[in-house]
Image 1: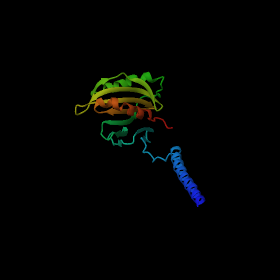
Image 2 (image 1 turned 90 degrees about the horizontal axis):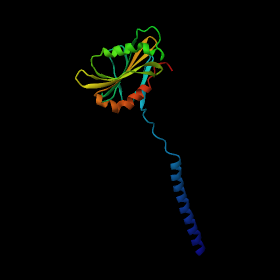
Image 3 (image 1 turned 90 degrees about the vertical axis):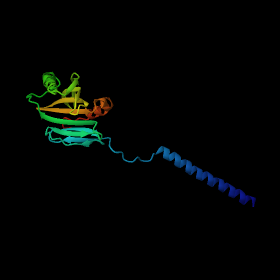
Image 4 (image 1 turned 30 degrees about the vertical axis):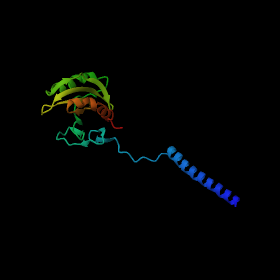
Length: 196
């Protein structure tokens, strides 16, 4: 009888050890091989215009808008309308292609375009940039909206063949520009001006 009891005890202990090994093995396995994540919604989406061959990536939560101005090819804004981005394209009136080397020749054109805007209240000096393969100038300025609120723009004038591409990143009120700066930089960095 003692022998049967001893065998039963050993079998019971082995069964408990086997169950514990399975539980511990399962936990170790889960820590080594994580469960697959649910597919995440993309942080940005691409919005392109095939007619002018320009594109940007904007936050996925932003909405596309329509403009009555035919030159505005891309227009998107944040859900609260505090931030907006527009891309417009028009003839530049310049016959020769603009390159980074010849860019200073067109500086008076971009300066004059901004001087013509009487809403501008404070303007920084333009700085030469290349964005999406296109040479141009970037300006930062504040301006008065129609209802008297002060807004802020980061405004790129870019030259593509015989066209002038304007990428405008807008914050209203202007005090939101520092908080929006990283998003605006990300959008500008994704600008596509040449076919890839």
